[in-house]
Length: 210
Image 1: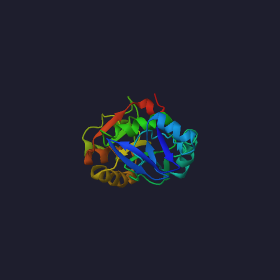
Image 2: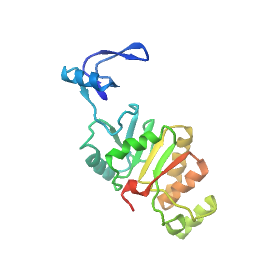
Image 3: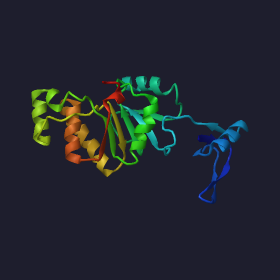
Image 4: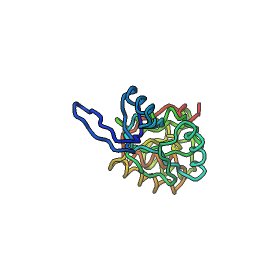
């Protein structure tokens, strides 16, 4: 269980004792956690990032998104960091979230966990609406010039889990450049095809669609 220490503690890790200062956030066994909490020496941290490394968080992609996300997350989690701004890799594991996608808080940790293996994890937009069905004629032509075939599913860019590395940093730069030209989902697809990060396609149901 994750706790934040109110006093310094020595904790055994791999057969060696390590000292953690007051204020540290650490993951310990349930018995130790509850003993420390009962003694007033620590507080429990119930967060949507669960047992992940501390450097994981959420970037709300607009002020309106930030308000919606605060309403979804803060009822169950007071700790996970939420920033506001354009798509950016502010954390080692970042969720880029447009608040119009009603992602369940309990799924956030699942998405972050997938980044242990994948560089991106993104829900599909639809099982039937393909790249050839969205955007303007000009936007579709620009996309076809890059990916060659528009008879492919596209991704719901309202929810994008990203692990920070050189590949995904290049991808984010390309996506930001492409998204100024038209439909965001097609822009995402062009950037994905050019930069080729390793992506896990999540079910459509992750963002409340059917």
